[in-house]
Every structure is written in C-alpha cells, then in structure tokens.
Length: 259
Image (cartoon, rainbow, N blue to C red; front, top):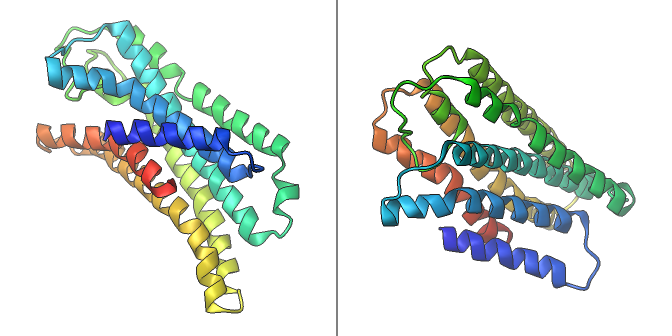
C-alpha cells in the first residue's frame, strides 16, 4: 500500500508538472492533493515499517509531537483540497464561464487558504499535549502518534485538549462535508436538468471519481474519530487495524481513482 501510494502520487506530480498543455484548476488541486498524500505517507510509514520489520518500537517525545502535528496538518489540508475540488466541479458543471471564475489567481488564493487552515488548526495540539504530566504507561496502541492516542496517556485533566480536538473534527468533517454536500446537490440538480440521458451520464462521469475519493476519505476519518471516543470496548487489534487503514487507504486509493 505504501509503494502504490508513493509511486502513484509521485507519478501524478510528475505528469502534472511535465505536461505542456494548459492546466485547469482541477490539475492544480490534484497536484496539491498528491503532495499532501505523499507527506502523510512519509510522516507515518518509515516508523511504521521500522516497528513491523525491525521491532523498533520507541520514538522520542519531540519526534512524536512533530509526527502528530504533520499528520494532522496535512490531513486537514487534504480535506480542504477536497472542498476546493468539489467547488471546481460545481463551477464546471453549473457555470458556463468556468475559466473566467476560477482563474489562476483565484486558485492560488484558495490553495493558500487551505494551507493556512491546515497549518493553524492543528497547531495547538502539540502545545497542549506537551504541558500535561505523564505518569502512567507510555505505550500507544498504534504505530504512529495521533492526538487522541497521546492525549490519553496523560495523568491530568485533558478536557481542554479533548474539546479542542472535537472542535477541529467539527470544522474539518462537519463544515467541509456540508460544503461538499451543498456543491454536489447543485451539481446533481444541474445534471438532472440536462435534456438527454447521454449528456447526463457524460457530465456525471466527470464527478464520480471525485465523489469516490471523498467517500473513502471522510467515512474512514469519521469512523476512526468516533471509534476512539466512544468504542472503548472494541478489541485492541481492531483499533490497530482501523488506525492503519485510516491513513494508508486514502493515499493509495486516490492514486488509483484519479490515475
């Protein structure tokens, strides 16, 4: 899965960069998505492989916080990119003057906004976690440092960190999914108003790959977030399995879907 994600996303970056024809907004957003997928994979996979192949099960606390921040930063960024791609699909289907609305400067501003949001929202996580005392076990039940896993090791009142984590989940999953749903509602209305069945199918095919990638990304994240907070009685091996699939599956499937 790591090999497919790495080679696939690297190939997408290479193709988008080397193709000489004019690039539309979708190609720029796809370039950003491939970069975020690569960074997420490179953040977790080397240590994960070291754990499974060489039984290297320790990680420095600062390295853990760095991994935690990069992981959440680029995951939030990826969610924003999906919103931008949904908006691009909406403009392409519902507005005939697509190129005059999503100009290169507008795309650059959207990309910058997604990067700033991705960098700022998870920024309090390492600072909040660093201030807690740790007097219990220092073992996390997964092969990478996620916010909830590290926070649960603290022997202190961590409600501030937990509440902020829920706020980030609401901002990312709640607001982003609502924006994407609104875009696709307008897209479907436009598709069903087209005169012929062939035209409807052709227009729908331009959006179906993006919709598949969205479903993979958000369903796994929502399930993982709810499982960590409310499914405490699930077997440990199931937690580990979901924690791995949650981050390994989307970068791999995105390359297949978009490729």
